[in-house]
Image (cartoon, rainbow, N blue to C red; front, side):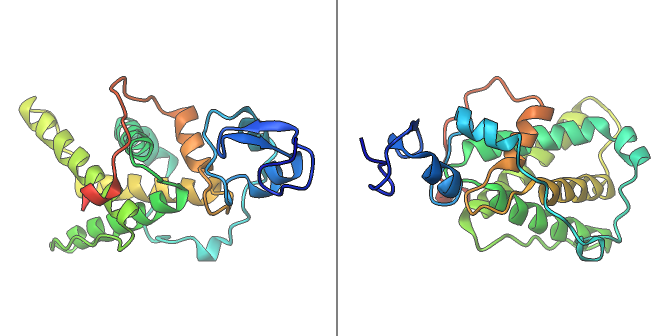
Length: 210
């Protein structure tokens, strides 16, 4: 049987991304490039173990003026878990969402919370519909958290705390992104370190979110 992608080499493994048999070379070169790989694919999981993290120039890391120290993360661990878990759930529930969409959503959220630091409120959403949908649902999650805390007379979450946590997540995305157009290495990272909701995560069209 010939590879379903190149139609030249002999097929060696089943690819759930193309619903057919493909060769090892096409699996390696087209994985998360032209193929939208399911996160449960065993060949994708194996490849993750050998991926080299991107080399980042410290001078090019965005939002360097926002301090995110180990002490900040310890003191706001619950907020980090909440936002990370919601980001994971939303990404898994948004059809076609990849790491670059999450990055764009985080960038626009950071811009929004930066404006709040100056006493203004100006929400900027990405032109990318997938990223815009993630942005909107993350904002809804934050508002739900604030209402829940207010109902319990608990200490409210400050905008500066949300901003710092979003900047940390942005840096994690930059550290985990494998550079592939359909890559979801950052999503895999979130799956490994943060709990998922037990609710059903049916795919949601990003067109509904904006």
